[in-house]
Length: 256
Image 1 (cartoon, rainbow, N blue to C red):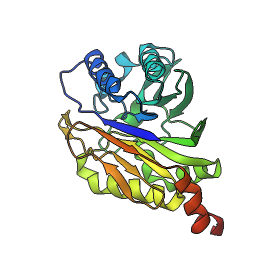
Image 2: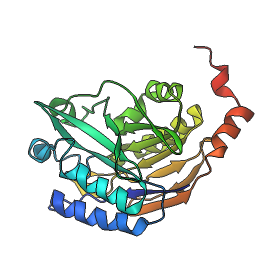
Image 3: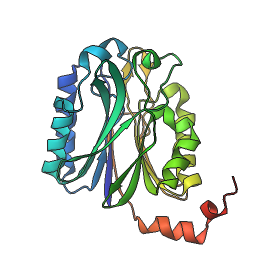
Image 4: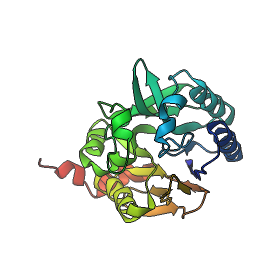
């Protein structure tokens, strides 16, 4: 299974439309890949809180339509990262996953909204439940950035049958070591593959952390980016999940 994570640079002064076009061109380079993932609120820019409301869209808006069409043309599963979703009078940090036909098969609203030096928790409404999506590769758990700090979310997804975690993020460089640790630990403790996509660049005076990763069920980082815009490309063998879970059955030994 060929997977790719597009690590997007967030440039102040670049419009949402310009950034979507630029990232769409990067997607066009990934013909033949099975699964592609993008970061958190990358089109607007996570720290551009003043643009959240005016750039919000419904689930049937142009952002979703654009990536639905990209997934269909590429014949790939595309996790478009997240965007600010408007539903009624509420706004959410919503990530979306499309199948090879361009059908929206997964929608996850960020459960743990960040409040440390962030207005996200003041503007947005949290999601209410862990999301696991059935795909041709097996069940996939969706989560967003700050969610990584809450292990119970990922254990809940494993209990629902997840074998792959997809993590979309806008994690700052200031806490980069935490990011690296959580990527590895969430994969290792749940014996899952974890594929993450983070932002890079300096936006609204915040340096983003990058280091998007692909981690195997042993907790080994098999592919990673650095601190510049890049595409992480690798192949994963999903048979490794069942092999490791049978050979070292820690999930069966749970007591609590």
